[in-house]
Amino acid sequence: MRIHVNDPLDKLAMEKLKASGYEVTEGHLEKEELIKEMPNINVLVVRSATKVTADVIEAGTDLKIIARAGTGLDNVDVEKAKEKGIKVINTPGANGISVAELAIGLMIACARHIARGTIDLKEGKWTKKELKGHELYKRTAGIIGFGNIGKEVAKRLLAFDMKVLAYDPFVKETDLNVEIVELERIFKESDIITIHVPLNEQTKHLINKEAFDAMKDGVIIINAARGGVVDEKALYDALVSGKVYAAGLDVFEVEPPTDELRKKLLELPNVVVTPHIGASTVEAQLRVGQIIVNKILEEIKN
Ligand code: NAD
Image (cartoon, rainbow, N blue to C red; front, side, top):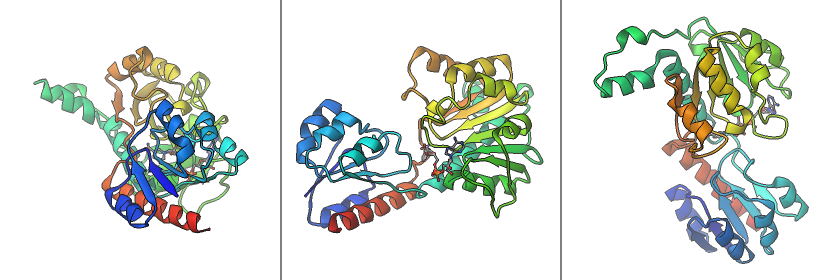
């Protein structure tokens, strides 16, 4: 049994995996190299960087398990794996608190111009008069996708005394003081919209020009889910026109965001960005690492 870890895992998790007695290899192989190596791999461990596409899976003639250390499975061709009888495992919920905390950080950064204030001061500019922001208190937040992360975000927004709405076609009720509503109401009533859905055919470009048109003027948009959920050209236009007050983005449809559109987006003063670090905390990676290793070892036993 050979387990290959293609994206970095937490150190303790690696130690536990190595102590299992199975052959464990680690190190990032780019697609072509990975495809060549696949016939010798029984368990492939990835985070979000490795794209486990149909051709990678096809090449895994002895592949038994694809282990995704994290939540989103949009980098794994789950259908192909199913077709080939390969088990796909992940760690739902294990990094939810970290992502929720980052989303809250991006919200406050957007509402209070924290990033711009930092850049200006470092450049020796005292822009106090230009950086009047907004409180979150008593304003309305709309959460799109009310799963693990969406709920953690809601709990924190309630502590700010915000009115919280949530849209999720698979959630009809909640014990939290959150109103479950249709998407139209999220767009119509929210001062801040935060996105926590998986990327799939239904959610790709869910936030497009039409959606922006339906939103309140001066809305704040937070995306710590997946870049593809937001049409970034439409977001760029809405930021330039002032329809959107500010956007906080941890994820991009192209990562790293180095193409022309993304470069233009990043240049806007009302965009606060982080390089897909929602789950990048010591605590989340420890949790994710432990859970995925336990699941792998259990799965091998079965
Ligand atoms: P989850 O599965 O617990 O929750 C996702 C929710 O979205 C579910 O309740 C689901 O019913 C809902 N949903 C599905 N389709 C929808 C739609 N069309 N409209 C509205 N809601 C819809 O997952 P989670 O742990 O909350 O994570 C959510 C997403 O966050 C992941 O899929 C992943 O893409 C992203 N994520 C990002 C980072 C990061 O580093 N920024 C880290 C972890 C997860």
